[in-house]
Structure formats: structure tokens, C-alpha cells
Length: 220
Length: 247
Image (cartoon, each protein chain N blue to C red):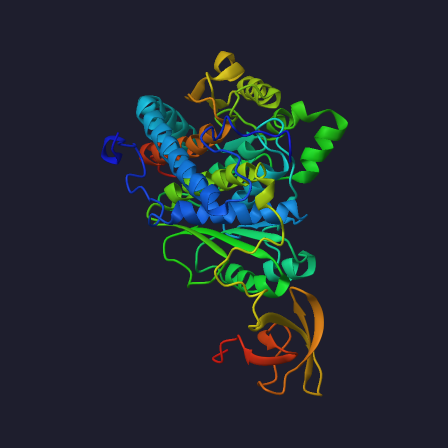
């Protein structure tokens, strides 16, 4: 326990070792402040990228209208966000269920690829197997630097898929990736705050798709 | 900046932490988790309706996003498994259970109410209609509204739970497992202890599980309980059943 410091997280908390009520009061105040920071970043981001969200939502809606499906992926907490996105598209709280699948859920596939080749290919190799022109590849990363996402976007582009990325900080390598057509960036340098707002961006993207989606007569 | 200035493009129905006590509850839950982690406890994570939340909580503790933070034991109870049966088989006294789930999730409420018998500390994160009082040791509840906004806020809640837990680790004097600063502490008082019935024999006795381990108790003061039932034990006897008679 000694030697660790979260001072940069909670600079106003002092190290009183025996006063639980005082610590609890400090924790409560700092959590309240963090909550408001997160809410501020969420609102600022959704306002700033509102136009981009509408454009990407429209592009994704066209893919779905033509029979495309969505593949989502990410690492760590972003892997759980990828699951969240796939769940919201397939089992929405309202609107049309749309075909979506997370590429992080099959442990047999993930461990086979990691063991035989390496973790960098776990998403690109799955897109090689499943991706068709007109499908959508959506990857989430807080740093924007994950090699396996960049490889997945390159593979998706080769296969004629629509590529969408959610990134943080200044966008990282994803912002420079030519094969990633749509990059939605949450400008923050806190992984937690980025991730919290990325969940909101993903949900806003889903709402944009729903408002644009116009299934053709005879479509599946 | 006031909330009305924020103008998000979706989820205009922004749920907010229910009442000013929310962050106090969050702080108390964090200190409780830190104490249990410090004493060697494991955190079990469940979210039957949205498995990704449980996975997110677990990865947060096991592999922190902030370099240098210690890895803490947190485990997902797989979605689709029998939550109560899985936890019953695997939790040890001193462990913790955190659930992200609505108040109507029966598996979750059945698991949470067994916390005292299993010796685990329970944290229930949710939104909308609240579970009844005392449904878990720590009920961290949001007002609800848009389910997607609530889901976003759950991420915020468990991120903060992780952050505050790690802050508590810097206050080692407050992490002693014997610290008892609750107003009423069941362990220290002579009140009844919650027990879960393991098996019943025909002699008016039952084998039960409590936070202190297995013990044989007299059940002649109550109706014959069934395996899995919760009973209140005092001085070696079951003094009341904690099950709803309308079963």
C-alpha cells in the first residue's frame, strides 16, 4: 500500500490515518466533483461532435438499409463498451433491432488467434472471416493507439467496410489512420472520463442511426 | 455552468444521483471495499441483464488503467449461470459482491440477502425504482429515466468506486479489518445472526452456514426450514425464519 499515490487524482485529500468520518467526507466531495466533471465532458463532447455524429449515423444507416451488419471491438473496458454497443443495436430500448456483433466475446477465437499469431490480429482476422462490403467496423479505444484496432480498420477498409472509431486524448494513431474514415474523439486526458463519455457517444451514435434508418421494401 | 446549459443531444432526461446522500453512500462503499481487499477479500461482479457492466467492473480492479495501481482480485460471475448457486459455491467470508442490476432482478436480490450468511459485503448499483431498504449493505441508486443514460452513469459510478477504493489504500490506519465504526454492528452485538440452511434432518436440527462458518442449530422454535432458507440464529437456535410465508 505504501508508495502508491493517487494525489494527482485527489490532490485535496490528505493522509489522515485515523479519522474515518473526515476521509469519507473528503471522498464524497471529490466524487461529487468528478461526477460533475464527467457530466460536463459528456455535454461538451456531444455538442461539439453533434454534426459528425449525425453524418456517421447516416452513413451507418445506409449500410444497415443495404443489409450490412455491425462488428464492434475494443480492449479492456473498451471491450465491454463494444459489447454494450452490440447489445444496444440488437436489443434496443426503442426502435428497430439491427444486426450487430461484438468481436470480443468468443474466448475460443480470441485465445486461438492470440496463441497462434498474436493479439494484434484478434479483430482483423475475425473481420477477414466475417466482413463483407457494406458492413461496418466500429472500434473503441481511449488512447487511440491500439495496434489491433488499427489492423482491424485496415482489414475493414480492404474489404469495403465502413470504418468508425471512438478515440480519446487527441485521437492518437486512430486520428492519423487513413483507413479509418470516421473518427469520433473525446478530448480528455483521463481514461475514466474518456470512457464515460465514449459510452454516451456510442449511445448517441445509435440514436442517430435509428433516426436515419429507412428500411427498403423487401429488405430483410 | 448550470445543468440546463449542458444541452446534450440525446438523453435529455438526465438521471441524477438520487438525493444528496448518493456520494456519501459511494464513499462508505469504497471504504468498505478497501477494508475487505486489504484483508484479502475477492470482489464478485454480476450484472445479469447487461453482462458488460460486470466485466467492466472486474477489469477495472484487476488491471487498473492507471499505471502503478495494484491489481485487486475481482471476478465476473458469468451471465447465464445461476447467480445464487455460483456465489454460494465460490464466495468466502470476507469477500464482496457488487451487482449492477434493476431492483426487479430476483437473482440479484436473492444473492444480496444472503450476504450476511455468507459473510460477504454487498454493493448494489442500479437506477429507477429502488430495492427495499436493507436489500444490500450499500445501495447506490440513480433516479433513472432514459435506460441508456442510466447505463452511462453506472460506468461513472463504478469508475468512482474504483478510484475512491484506491484512495482509501493510502489511509492504512483506516483499513484494519477489526475497525467497527458502524452505529449498530451485528457482529459485535448479541443480536441474531443470519444463517442459510444447508440441510435439515428430522431431529429438529439443521446444518447452517453463517459468516463464521458451518454450525448445527436447533430449529424447534420455527416451522421446519428448507435448504436455502435464511433463518435468524441466536444462542444456537433458529429464532425466526427470514423467508416470506407466502411462498
